[in-house]
Image 1 (cartoon, rainbow, N blue to C red):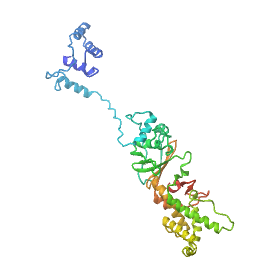
Image 2: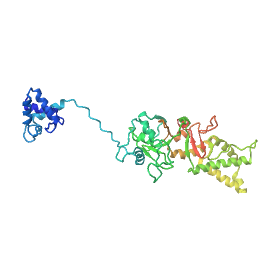
Image 3: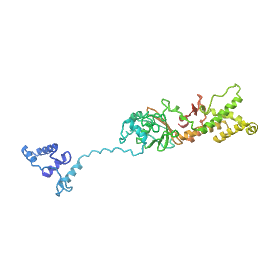
Image 4: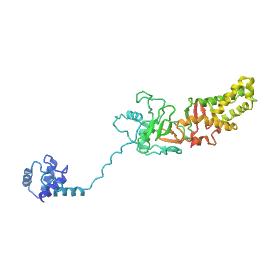
Length: 396
């Protein structure tokens, strides 16, 4: 073995790719190589004693020596290195380049005790998102993501100006869980919180997503949309209709002397609007303008009826009037939360979620919009001042 070959073998087997005498492991490797050359212990000791201070140090000044790129030693090193089996490089962690919601991320970091520079754990699953105007669909949170889904379940954004980590009744269960599931995954969604009473809870790529958690209620039975007290014109129109209905029934009671069921703008089913318009027709058959010349009360009645027509438009019969009133009643609320083309989602703590794609056109043209259900309820209406729409029957 030549000296160059000896240095090459020693370099190849050293820990750092080049040997140093201050590394006991490198010295041991050299001694092992020399032993295989059948040298005596004395000869081996002589070699070790006569080595220069840095036998493995690269001579970068003398051409052709170890350390120079064109030296025989360096060229052989390169061949040896290329012939060694190379392990696959570890993939770099995928960087989350999407724009996140600073408030929602801060809430999650607070829960996980993470610093501002520490990454939020990413969801393992990839979840469906059809985008604006998509059809109704379901997802199931994967088992590997359920730990964080449940951990974030009760988190809510704080009230304006309040400390992160405090709760707010303005948001419900599952909202931040759903945000995390889509924002911090490979689902292709940039999620945002949209605080404000007239806004949907979240936006996915700019599309409104209203989040509801109806507990153990089956998806097919979910229907609540929340309060509509800010919709003053709609409340006024309903007040006119039901007010005249009660007035007429009081003046001309039915043969049994009973009033209809106690209905009001805050408690009614859409099918009950048909009866209200049937009663209202009795006023429309009277020449209110002529009577108004005699009794000022009828002038006021005509003014109120004209106001109702200006809101919902002319109707050809009681069924048409009921449909127009139902559409007028629900359109503003649905238009805001989640918005035409948006989604309403019922989330469950077991990860079962159903997204209903909201289409105003589909709603207003549905043949069963003012249908009376066998059990007596309806598909649209109000209960205790909260609007309800049967999502699965009208949108599913």
